[in-house]
Length: 158
Image 1 (cartoon, one colour):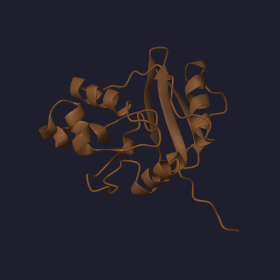
Image 2 (image 1 turned 90 degrees about the vertical axis):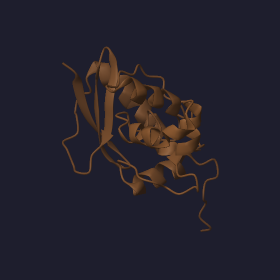
Image 3 (image 1 turned 180 degrees about the horizontal axis):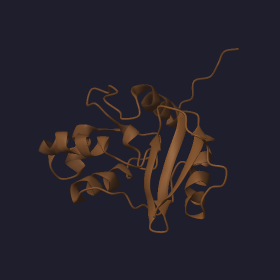
């Protein structure tokens, strides 16, 4: 049986699921949920690293992952982890990196089914024209994450 924790993030409540075999799911909820008072031991490191990410102290995750998906989906999710913090790739570039430029739709579909929000950075994949395209967590969250990771921070004049 997998452990579950709910934590607060700047983008809403995140649901974290995993066990000693690794993290299987991190999702952001579109509704409130009771926050977890005592984080299960198997999820402590994930919670710690996610909090560091949101505080701007972490640019890479070092977690044992155990997502559930097809072999192709897992291949896409591994490739997503190669997109550096503060950078983005297009769906076409992702398909080419997977070895098949004709697999753009399949890569986009696998990207959309990524069960590990932020940890596997599907938010770093954008349209070929630079547009923000579909994002399971909502485009406002995708924009926030890309801004959060941007090497050029907007500063207030006052």
